[in-house]
Length: 326
Image 1 (tube, rainbow, N blue to C red):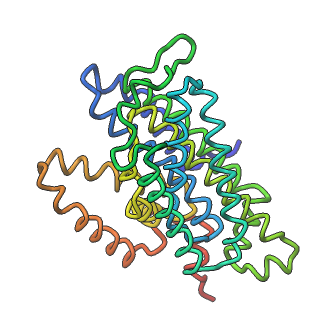
Image 2 (cartoon, rainbow, N blue to C red):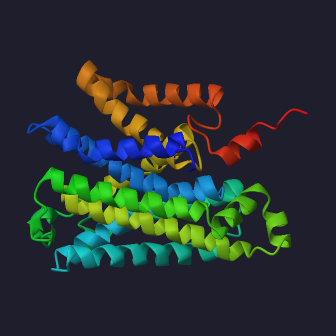
């Protein structure tokens, strides 16, 4: 009988606690469940971005563009009466298709050039949402979109409370984490690592680099669009200001702090950088908002100095950063 590894035991215990969290909190739990759901949305985004940054080593600074595409597409379809359960695959396919079309010309670029192009795409998407007033209502966002959207229900339960979306988001995070784990330990996952380590050597060994990069790009785009579709149904509002460049940087910071390429590390990074401000806000008051970026900067500096591979680094990346002594 194989011994149970501590990461598996910790993840299982953590998931069980999240399942019973509403029971532990009691009836007055809406604020905590709101924060937990928000952490879940960012976890979905970071799990998607981790595929391109953590697994294959492509710096993507425009990931929020696909979050925005999923949110706007879901809102526009929902107010026209399309079912939520049909919207999810439509948004995922749209996000994956756009990601594929974007990746075809830009995945030949490397390093800083790729980062600049993805950054530009993210800003172009936000500007389009800001200026296509006839479709998106411009800077004001879609007004009262939540009142017009189709009803979300499952097995006769109508999703009209935070707790319903909490469990929906938790299920989606678990599904995405399983997909990411299986992908990481698959043949495709090993191709990701080979490309991240040495793209030329990977190509010479027979790996179709362009195809593997496209697969990583498409899957991450699908996760981003899915997160946007769920978020807009939960919050009932969408505007261009929600998808700024700084939000993309925020996602990268969560992955770097937690540990690139490690699912547990990514989850820890999300909990720290999304949950910590809310804890400090409740303990130190609203004036903390003025110092939030300063705290983030200090956390990033400390982690980069003392834990450059992240708080919970990937075992593979740890081996890269610490060459064993002879």
